[in-house]
Image 1 (tube, rainbow, N blue to C red):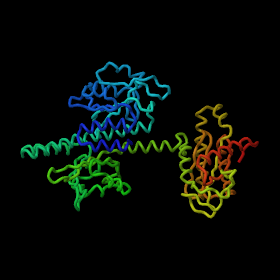
Image 2: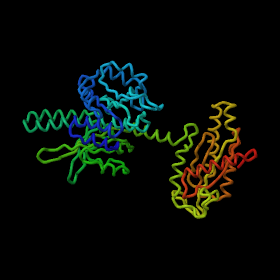
Image 3: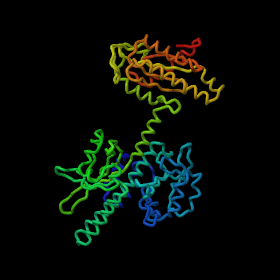
Image 4: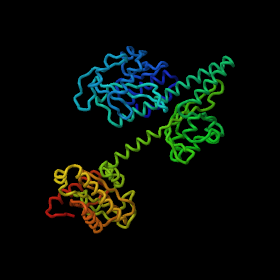
Length: 499
Protein backbone atom coordinates (compact mmCIF):
# COMPACT_ATOMS: atom_id res chain seq x y z
CA UNK A 1 0.00 0.00 0.00
CA UNK A 2 1.39 3.44 -0.85
CA UNK A 3 1.71 6.19 1.76
CA UNK A 4 -0.97 8.40 0.19
CA UNK A 5 -3.34 5.44 0.06
CA UNK A 6 -2.73 4.77 3.77
CA UNK A 7 -3.61 8.40 4.53
CA UNK A 8 -6.75 8.20 2.39
CA UNK A 9 -7.97 5.07 4.15
CA UNK A 10 -7.91 6.61 7.61
CA UNK A 11 -10.28 9.32 6.40
CA UNK A 12 -12.72 6.90 4.77
CA UNK A 13 -13.22 4.70 7.84
CA UNK A 14 -16.85 4.75 8.98
CA UNK A 15 -16.38 4.66 12.76
CA UNK A 16 -13.85 5.59 15.41
CA UNK A 17 -12.90 1.92 15.90
CA UNK A 18 -12.42 1.49 12.15
CA UNK A 19 -10.35 4.69 12.04
CA UNK A 20 -8.05 3.50 14.82
CA UNK A 21 -7.55 0.11 13.18
CA UNK A 22 -6.98 1.76 9.79
CA UNK A 23 -4.25 3.91 11.36
CA UNK A 24 -2.48 0.82 12.75
CA UNK A 25 -2.93 -1.14 9.50
CA UNK A 26 -1.65 1.78 7.42
CA UNK A 27 1.53 2.09 9.50
CA UNK A 28 2.29 -1.55 8.72
CA UNK A 29 1.18 -1.80 5.08
CA UNK A 30 1.93 1.75 4.00
CA UNK A 31 5.16 2.51 5.85
CA UNK A 32 6.85 -0.88 6.06
CA UNK A 33 6.87 -1.63 9.80
CA UNK A 34 6.29 -5.14 11.12
CA UNK A 35 4.13 -3.98 14.02
CA UNK A 36 2.19 -0.80 14.82
CA UNK A 37 0.15 0.16 17.85
CA UNK A 38 -2.28 3.05 18.36
CA UNK A 39 -2.33 4.31 21.97
CA UNK A 40 -5.30 6.62 22.54
CA UNK A 41 -5.56 9.23 25.30
CA UNK A 42 -8.56 8.45 27.48
CA UNK A 43 -10.79 10.80 29.49
CA UNK A 44 -8.53 10.45 32.53
CA UNK A 45 -5.39 11.28 30.55
CA UNK A 46 -3.92 7.76 30.54
CA UNK A 47 -3.30 6.00 27.21
CA UNK A 48 -5.06 2.79 26.24
CA UNK A 49 -3.97 0.39 23.49
CA UNK A 50 -6.87 0.98 21.08
CA UNK A 51 -5.63 -0.87 17.97
CA UNK A 52 -2.69 -3.04 16.91
CA UNK A 53 -1.59 -4.47 13.57
CA UNK A 54 1.09 -6.87 12.42
CA UNK A 55 1.05 -9.52 15.15
CA UNK A 56 -2.12 -11.37 16.31
CA UNK A 57 -0.40 -12.60 19.49
CA UNK A 58 0.63 -9.08 20.47
CA UNK A 59 -2.86 -7.82 19.65
CA UNK A 60 -4.52 -10.37 21.93
CA UNK A 61 -2.08 -9.64 24.75
CA UNK A 62 -1.99 -5.82 24.73
CA UNK A 63 -5.25 -4.47 23.27
CA UNK A 64 -7.27 -2.70 25.95
CA UNK A 65 -4.39 -2.40 28.40
CA UNK A 66 -3.61 1.02 29.86
CA UNK A 67 -0.34 2.88 30.38
CA UNK A 68 -0.15 5.85 32.72
CA UNK A 69 0.25 9.37 31.33
CA UNK A 70 3.36 9.91 33.44
CA UNK A 71 5.09 6.88 31.89
CA UNK A 72 4.17 8.05 28.39
CA UNK A 73 5.40 11.57 29.03
CA UNK A 74 8.69 10.06 30.18
CA UNK A 75 8.95 8.23 26.85
CA UNK A 76 8.18 11.36 24.84
CA UNK A 77 10.96 13.26 26.60
CA UNK A 78 13.65 10.57 26.22
CA UNK A 79 15.83 9.56 23.31
CA UNK A 80 16.29 11.48 20.08
CA UNK A 81 13.94 14.04 18.52
CA UNK A 82 13.42 13.04 14.88
CA UNK A 83 11.55 16.17 13.66
CA UNK A 84 8.56 15.49 15.87
CA UNK A 85 9.07 11.74 16.23
CA UNK A 86 10.71 10.28 19.35
CA UNK A 87 13.31 7.53 18.85
CA UNK A 88 14.65 5.71 21.93
CA UNK A 89 17.60 3.45 21.10
CA UNK A 90 18.03 0.18 22.95
CA UNK A 91 21.00 1.66 24.82
CA UNK A 92 18.58 4.00 26.63
CA UNK A 93 15.27 2.15 26.43
CA UNK A 94 16.17 -0.64 28.82
CA UNK A 95 15.05 1.59 31.71
CA UNK A 96 11.49 1.37 30.35
CA UNK A 97 11.26 -2.41 30.33
CA UNK A 98 9.51 -2.64 33.70
CA UNK A 99 7.14 0.36 33.70
CA UNK A 100 3.37 0.12 33.25
CA UNK A 101 3.13 0.86 29.52
CA UNK A 102 2.00 -2.19 27.49
CA UNK A 103 4.78 -3.08 25.06
CA UNK A 104 5.85 -5.79 22.66
CA UNK A 105 9.22 -6.33 21.01
CA UNK A 106 9.96 -8.46 17.98
CA UNK A 107 12.75 -10.87 18.84
CA UNK A 108 15.75 -11.04 16.58
CA UNK A 109 19.52 -10.80 16.41
CA UNK A 110 21.49 -7.62 16.97
CA UNK A 111 21.81 -5.53 13.78
CA UNK A 112 24.73 -6.11 11.46
CA UNK A 113 24.79 -2.55 10.12
CA UNK A 114 25.51 0.73 11.88
CA UNK A 115 22.02 2.00 11.03
CA UNK A 116 20.38 -1.35 11.71
CA UNK A 117 17.27 -1.64 13.87
CA UNK A 118 17.88 -3.30 17.24
CA UNK A 119 15.03 -5.51 18.60
CA UNK A 120 14.78 -3.22 21.64
CA UNK A 121 14.74 0.08 19.73
CA UNK A 122 11.55 2.13 20.12
CA UNK A 123 9.98 4.70 17.78
CA UNK A 124 6.95 6.81 18.69
CA UNK A 125 4.90 9.22 16.55
CA UNK A 126 2.84 11.51 18.82
CA UNK A 127 -0.54 12.59 17.42
CA UNK A 128 -1.22 16.24 18.19
CA UNK A 129 -4.24 18.33 17.30
CA UNK A 130 -3.54 21.76 15.74
CA UNK A 131 -3.94 23.36 19.19
CA UNK A 132 -1.09 21.21 20.54
CA UNK A 133 -3.26 18.75 22.48
CA UNK A 134 -1.90 15.19 22.57
CA UNK A 135 -4.64 12.85 21.31
CA UNK A 136 -2.58 9.66 21.17
CA UNK A 137 0.70 8.01 20.13
CA UNK A 138 1.50 5.66 17.27
CA UNK A 139 4.27 3.25 18.26
CA UNK A 140 6.00 1.20 15.54
CA UNK A 141 8.45 -1.68 15.76
CA UNK A 142 11.12 -3.02 13.41
CA UNK A 143 11.13 -1.68 9.83
CA UNK A 144 10.84 -4.57 7.40
CA UNK A 145 14.17 -3.67 5.79
CA UNK A 146 15.84 -3.98 9.22
CA UNK A 147 17.24 -0.44 9.18
CA UNK A 148 16.40 2.72 11.03
CA UNK A 149 14.17 4.95 8.88
CA UNK A 150 15.86 7.76 6.97
CA UNK A 151 14.83 11.42 6.95
CA UNK A 152 12.21 11.06 4.21
CA UNK A 153 10.58 8.06 5.92
CA UNK A 154 10.60 9.91 9.25
CA UNK A 155 8.88 12.94 7.73
CA UNK A 156 6.30 10.65 6.08
CA UNK A 157 5.52 9.00 9.45
CA UNK A 158 5.30 12.40 11.17
CA UNK A 159 2.88 13.63 8.49
CA UNK A 160 0.89 10.42 8.88
CA UNK A 161 0.58 11.01 12.63
CA UNK A 162 -0.74 14.53 11.93
CA UNK A 163 -3.40 13.18 9.57
CA UNK A 164 -4.22 10.44 12.05
CA UNK A 165 -4.94 13.00 14.78
CA UNK A 166 -7.29 14.87 12.46
CA UNK A 167 -8.97 11.62 11.36
CA UNK A 168 -9.56 10.57 14.99
CA UNK A 169 -10.94 14.00 15.83
CA UNK A 170 -13.26 13.89 12.83
CA UNK A 171 -14.31 10.31 13.59
CA UNK A 172 -15.26 11.35 17.10
CA UNK A 173 -17.14 14.35 15.83
CA UNK A 174 -18.85 12.27 13.13
CA UNK A 175 -19.80 9.67 15.72
CA UNK A 176 -21.32 12.37 17.89
CA UNK A 177 -23.26 13.71 14.92
CA UNK A 178 -24.54 10.30 13.93
CA UNK A 179 -25.66 9.56 17.47
CA UNK A 180 -27.41 12.91 17.52
CA UNK A 181 -29.24 12.05 14.29
CA UNK A 182 -30.46 8.76 15.80
CA UNK A 183 -31.72 10.56 18.85
CA UNK A 184 -33.44 13.07 16.54
CA UNK A 185 -35.79 10.35 15.34
CA UNK A 186 -36.79 9.44 18.88
CA UNK A 187 -37.85 12.68 20.51
CA UNK A 188 -37.75 16.41 20.15
CA UNK A 189 -36.08 17.06 23.49
CA UNK A 190 -33.14 14.88 22.51
CA UNK A 191 -32.92 16.86 19.29
CA UNK A 192 -32.35 20.11 21.18
CA UNK A 193 -29.68 18.47 23.31
CA UNK A 194 -27.89 17.05 20.30
CA UNK A 195 -28.01 20.38 18.48
CA UNK A 196 -26.36 22.07 21.41
CA UNK A 197 -23.75 19.31 21.59
CA UNK A 198 -23.01 19.69 17.89
CA UNK A 199 -22.89 23.46 18.18
CA UNK A 200 -20.30 23.29 20.93
CA UNK A 201 -18.26 20.64 19.13
CA UNK A 202 -18.37 22.74 15.96
CA UNK A 203 -17.85 26.19 17.46
CA UNK A 204 -15.10 25.22 19.89
CA UNK A 205 -13.20 22.80 17.65
CA UNK A 206 -9.45 23.59 17.83
CA UNK A 207 -9.15 23.54 14.04
CA UNK A 208 -11.18 25.32 11.39
CA UNK A 209 -14.61 23.82 10.67
CA UNK A 210 -17.14 24.67 7.99
CA UNK A 211 -20.51 23.40 6.77
CA UNK A 212 -21.00 23.77 3.03
CA UNK A 213 -23.88 23.14 0.69
CA UNK A 214 -23.87 19.92 -1.33
CA UNK A 215 -25.35 19.90 -4.83
CA UNK A 216 -27.45 22.47 -6.64
CA UNK A 217 -26.44 25.86 -7.99
CA UNK A 218 -24.83 26.87 -4.70
CA UNK A 219 -22.76 23.71 -4.27
CA UNK A 220 -19.77 24.38 -2.03
CA UNK A 221 -21.04 27.65 -0.55
CA UNK A 222 -20.06 28.17 3.08
CA UNK A 223 -23.18 27.97 5.23
CA UNK A 224 -21.50 28.06 8.60
CA UNK A 225 -17.95 28.54 9.86
CA UNK A 226 -16.44 28.41 13.32
CA UNK A 227 -14.23 30.96 15.06
CA UNK A 228 -11.05 28.95 14.44
CA UNK A 229 -11.54 29.21 10.65
CA UNK A 230 -12.33 32.92 10.92
CA UNK A 231 -9.10 33.50 12.85
CA UNK A 232 -7.11 31.40 10.40
CA UNK A 233 -8.32 33.38 7.36
CA UNK A 234 -8.66 36.73 9.14
CA UNK A 235 -12.27 37.12 7.98
CA UNK A 236 -15.52 37.56 9.93
CA UNK A 237 -18.25 34.95 9.60
CA UNK A 238 -20.51 37.34 7.69
CA UNK A 239 -17.86 37.74 4.98
CA UNK A 240 -16.92 34.07 4.70
CA UNK A 241 -20.55 33.07 4.20
CA UNK A 242 -20.49 34.89 0.86
CA UNK A 243 -17.83 32.53 -0.50
CA UNK A 244 -17.19 28.93 -1.36
CA UNK A 245 -13.83 27.23 -0.91
CA UNK A 246 -13.27 27.48 -4.68
CA UNK A 247 -13.42 31.30 -4.32
CA UNK A 248 -10.75 31.27 -1.63
CA UNK A 249 -8.33 28.65 -2.94
CA UNK A 250 -5.08 29.64 -4.69
CA UNK A 251 -5.48 29.41 -8.51
CA UNK A 252 -2.68 26.84 -8.71
CA UNK A 253 -4.48 24.57 -6.19
CA UNK A 254 -7.97 24.62 -7.69
CA UNK A 255 -7.51 21.23 -9.37
CA UNK A 256 -6.42 19.66 -6.07
CA UNK A 257 -9.53 21.06 -4.41
CA UNK A 258 -11.83 19.79 -7.16
CA UNK A 259 -10.24 16.33 -7.05
CA UNK A 260 -11.03 16.05 -3.36
CA UNK A 261 -13.62 13.32 -3.05
CA UNK A 262 -16.91 14.12 -1.37
CA UNK A 263 -16.78 11.17 1.01
CA UNK A 264 -13.73 11.24 3.25
CA UNK A 265 -11.44 12.97 0.75
CA UNK A 266 -8.66 15.38 1.65
CA UNK A 267 -6.34 17.85 -0.04
CA UNK A 268 -3.55 20.25 0.87
CA UNK A 269 -4.21 23.67 -0.64
CA UNK A 270 -3.60 27.38 -0.03
CA UNK A 271 -6.50 29.58 1.07
CA UNK A 272 -6.62 33.37 0.78
CA UNK A 273 -6.48 35.49 3.91
CA UNK A 274 -7.91 38.96 4.38
CA UNK A 275 -4.51 40.65 3.92
CA UNK A 276 -4.06 39.02 0.49
CA UNK A 277 -1.58 36.38 1.64
CA UNK A 278 -2.19 32.64 1.47
CA UNK A 279 -1.99 30.02 4.19
CA UNK A 280 -1.38 26.29 3.64
CA UNK A 281 -4.21 24.14 5.02
CA UNK A 282 -5.31 20.52 4.98
CA UNK A 283 -8.96 20.22 3.93
CA UNK A 284 -10.88 17.04 4.79
CA UNK A 285 -14.54 16.47 3.90
CA UNK A 286 -17.16 14.33 5.57
CA UNK A 287 -20.72 13.90 4.34
CA UNK A 288 -23.46 14.55 6.86
CA UNK A 289 -26.42 12.52 5.59
CA UNK A 290 -30.13 12.59 6.29
CA UNK A 291 -31.56 9.12 6.78
CA UNK A 292 -34.49 9.88 4.50
CA UNK A 293 -33.20 12.28 1.86
CA UNK A 294 -29.55 11.21 1.65
CA UNK A 295 -26.51 13.52 1.81
CA UNK A 296 -27.37 17.11 2.63
CA UNK A 297 -24.11 18.96 3.28
CA UNK A 298 -20.38 18.64 3.87
CA UNK A 299 -18.65 18.93 7.21
CA UNK A 300 -15.18 20.22 6.36
CA UNK A 301 -12.16 20.25 8.65
CA UNK A 302 -9.53 22.88 7.83
CA UNK A 303 -6.18 22.30 9.56
CA UNK A 304 -3.34 24.84 9.57
CA UNK A 305 -0.23 23.21 8.05
CA UNK A 306 1.69 26.41 7.29
CA UNK A 307 4.47 25.53 9.75
CA UNK A 308 4.96 22.08 8.25
CA UNK A 309 5.01 23.47 4.69
CA UNK A 310 7.54 26.12 5.73
CA UNK A 311 9.71 23.42 7.30
CA UNK A 312 9.48 21.30 4.15
CA UNK A 313 10.49 24.32 2.06
CA UNK A 314 13.46 24.95 4.33
CA UNK A 315 14.55 21.32 3.99
CA UNK A 316 14.34 21.60 0.20
CA UNK A 317 16.35 24.82 0.28
CA UNK A 318 19.04 23.22 2.45
CA UNK A 319 19.23 20.27 0.10
CA UNK A 320 19.80 22.52 -2.93
CA UNK A 321 22.22 25.10 -1.47
CA UNK A 322 25.72 24.62 -0.09
CA UNK A 323 25.65 25.46 3.62
CA UNK A 324 29.02 27.23 3.63
CA UNK A 325 28.97 29.32 0.44
CA UNK A 326 25.27 29.55 -0.42
CA UNK A 327 26.00 28.24 -3.92
CA UNK A 328 24.18 25.32 -5.48
CA UNK A 329 25.09 21.81 -4.34
CA UNK A 330 26.42 19.28 -6.79
CA UNK A 331 23.17 17.29 -6.66
CA UNK A 332 21.10 20.39 -7.45
CA UNK A 333 23.43 21.31 -10.32
CA UNK A 334 23.08 17.76 -11.69
CA UNK A 335 19.28 18.06 -11.60
CA UNK A 336 19.35 21.40 -13.46
CA UNK A 337 21.73 20.06 -16.05
CA UNK A 338 19.62 16.94 -16.56
CA UNK A 339 16.49 19.08 -17.07
CA UNK A 340 18.35 21.11 -19.70
CA UNK A 341 19.84 18.33 -21.83
CA UNK A 342 17.58 16.64 -24.36
CA UNK A 343 17.76 13.12 -25.77
CA UNK A 344 18.85 14.22 -29.25
CA UNK A 345 22.39 12.90 -29.82
CA UNK A 346 25.14 15.16 -31.18
CA UNK A 347 25.38 14.01 -34.78
CA UNK A 348 28.64 15.93 -35.26
CA UNK A 349 30.37 13.95 -32.52
CA UNK A 350 32.17 10.71 -33.23
CA UNK A 351 31.19 7.51 -31.45
CA UNK A 352 34.61 7.44 -29.77
CA UNK A 353 34.02 10.76 -27.99
CA UNK A 354 30.44 11.06 -26.73
CA UNK A 355 31.44 13.95 -24.41
CA UNK A 356 32.62 16.33 -27.12
CA UNK A 357 34.96 19.12 -26.01
CA UNK A 358 34.09 21.15 -29.09
CA UNK A 359 30.63 22.78 -29.05
CA UNK A 360 27.74 21.30 -30.96
CA UNK A 361 26.59 24.03 -33.35
CA UNK A 362 23.07 24.95 -34.42
CA UNK A 363 21.39 22.97 -31.70
CA UNK A 364 19.01 24.32 -29.06
CA UNK A 365 18.95 22.67 -25.66
CA UNK A 366 15.55 22.70 -24.05
CA UNK A 367 14.81 25.42 -21.45
CA UNK A 368 17.63 27.65 -22.73
CA UNK A 369 17.59 31.07 -24.46
CA UNK A 370 17.47 30.78 -28.23
CA UNK A 371 20.56 31.97 -30.08
CA UNK A 372 22.06 31.55 -33.50
CA UNK A 373 24.60 29.00 -32.25
CA UNK A 374 22.89 28.02 -29.01
CA UNK A 375 24.90 25.63 -26.84
CA UNK A 376 25.71 25.08 -23.18
CA UNK A 377 29.21 25.73 -21.78
CA UNK A 378 30.44 23.86 -18.70
CA UNK A 379 33.20 25.72 -16.86
CA UNK A 380 34.97 23.97 -13.98
CA UNK A 381 37.49 25.65 -11.70
CA UNK A 382 39.79 23.90 -9.25
CA UNK A 383 41.57 25.80 -6.47
CA UNK A 384 45.30 25.13 -6.62
CA UNK A 385 46.93 24.04 -3.37
CA UNK A 386 43.78 24.41 -1.31
CA UNK A 387 44.48 21.29 0.77
CA UNK A 388 47.92 22.63 1.73
CA UNK A 389 46.44 26.06 2.50
CA UNK A 390 43.78 24.46 4.69
CA UNK A 391 46.34 22.41 6.63
CA UNK A 392 48.68 25.38 7.09
CA UNK A 393 46.14 28.04 8.13
CA UNK A 394 43.39 25.93 9.65
CA UNK A 395 39.90 24.97 8.63
CA UNK A 396 38.35 28.31 9.60
CA UNK A 397 40.71 30.15 7.26
CA UNK A 398 40.03 27.59 4.53
CA UNK A 399 36.28 28.06 4.91
CA UNK A 400 36.68 31.83 4.78
CA UNK A 401 38.73 31.48 1.61
CA UNK A 402 36.04 29.32 -0.01
CA UNK A 403 33.36 31.89 0.88
CA UNK A 404 35.51 34.66 -0.62
CA UNK A 405 36.14 32.60 -3.76
CA UNK A 406 32.42 31.93 -4.16
CA UNK A 407 31.63 35.66 -3.80
CA UNK A 408 34.30 36.65 -6.34
CA UNK A 409 33.13 34.08 -8.90
CA UNK A 410 29.47 35.01 -8.47
CA UNK A 411 30.28 38.72 -8.79
CA UNK A 412 32.23 38.10 -11.98
CA UNK A 413 29.36 36.10 -13.47
CA UNK A 414 26.92 38.85 -12.47
CA UNK A 415 29.11 41.47 -14.16
CA UNK A 416 29.00 39.46 -17.37
CA UNK A 417 25.19 39.20 -17.44
CA UNK A 418 25.21 39.23 -21.23
CA UNK A 419 24.26 35.58 -21.01
CA UNK A 420 20.61 36.35 -20.20
CA UNK A 421 19.25 34.98 -16.95
CA UNK A 422 21.55 34.44 -13.91
CA UNK A 423 23.72 31.41 -14.56
CA UNK A 424 23.94 28.62 -11.95
CA UNK A 425 27.16 28.32 -9.94
CA UNK A 426 27.83 25.27 -7.74
CA UNK A 427 30.49 24.11 -5.32
CA UNK A 428 31.55 20.50 -5.89
CA UNK A 429 34.17 18.21 -4.34
CA UNK A 430 34.93 20.77 -1.63
CA UNK A 431 37.34 23.02 -3.56
CA UNK A 432 35.97 22.95 -7.12
CA UNK A 433 33.34 25.19 -8.70
CA UNK A 434 31.17 24.55 -11.76
CA UNK A 435 28.99 26.97 -13.74
CA UNK A 436 26.71 26.39 -16.72
CA UNK A 437 26.58 29.24 -19.24
CA UNK A 438 24.20 29.11 -22.23
CA UNK A 439 24.73 30.56 -25.69
CA UNK A 440 28.51 31.02 -25.89
CA UNK A 441 30.96 30.24 -28.66
CA UNK A 442 34.42 28.87 -27.91
CA UNK A 443 36.24 32.25 -27.93
CA UNK A 444 33.79 33.89 -25.56
CA UNK A 445 33.85 30.82 -23.29
CA UNK A 446 37.67 30.83 -23.08
CA UNK A 447 37.60 34.54 -22.27
CA UNK A 448 35.13 33.90 -19.47
CA UNK A 449 37.34 31.15 -17.98
CA UNK A 450 40.26 33.60 -17.91
CA UNK A 451 38.12 36.28 -16.24
CA UNK A 452 36.90 33.88 -13.60
CA UNK A 453 40.46 32.83 -12.74
CA UNK A 454 41.56 36.47 -12.64
CA UNK A 455 38.63 37.31 -10.36
CA UNK A 456 40.36 35.36 -7.59
CA UNK A 457 43.24 37.85 -7.32
CA UNK A 458 41.94 39.20 -3.95
CA UNK A 459 42.17 35.65 -2.62
CA UNK A 460 45.62 34.22 -1.74
CA UNK A 461 44.95 31.24 -3.98
CA UNK A 462 44.97 30.57 -7.72
CA UNK A 463 42.68 28.48 -9.86
CA UNK A 464 42.92 26.08 -12.76
CA UNK A 465 40.01 26.38 -15.18
CA UNK A 466 38.72 24.22 -18.03
CA UNK A 467 35.73 24.37 -20.29
CA UNK A 468 33.77 21.76 -22.19
CA UNK A 469 30.30 21.53 -23.66
CA UNK A 470 27.22 19.75 -22.38
CA UNK A 471 26.26 17.65 -25.37
CA UNK A 472 22.69 16.47 -25.77
CA UNK A 473 22.36 12.72 -25.98
CA UNK A 474 24.60 12.31 -22.91
CA UNK A 475 23.61 12.32 -19.24
CA UNK A 476 24.33 14.98 -16.64
CA UNK A 477 26.58 12.50 -14.79
CA UNK A 478 28.64 11.94 -17.94
CA UNK A 479 29.06 15.67 -18.55
CA UNK A 480 30.15 16.40 -14.97
CA UNK A 481 32.46 13.40 -14.91
CA UNK A 482 34.04 14.57 -18.18
CA UNK A 483 34.62 18.08 -16.82
CA UNK A 484 36.23 16.61 -13.69
CA UNK A 485 38.57 14.45 -15.78
CA UNK A 486 39.56 17.42 -17.94
CA UNK A 487 40.32 19.52 -14.87
CA UNK A 488 42.55 16.83 -13.35
CA UNK A 489 44.41 16.47 -16.68
CA UNK A 490 44.91 20.24 -16.86
CA UNK A 491 46.25 20.41 -13.29
CA UNK A 492 49.02 18.00 -14.27
CA UNK A 493 50.35 20.52 -16.80
CA UNK A 494 53.16 22.87 -15.64
CA UNK A 495 52.44 26.54 -15.04
CA UNK A 496 51.45 28.82 -12.18
CA UNK A 497 47.86 29.42 -13.36
CA UNK A 498 46.44 27.09 -15.97
CA UNK A 499 43.35 28.42 -17.81
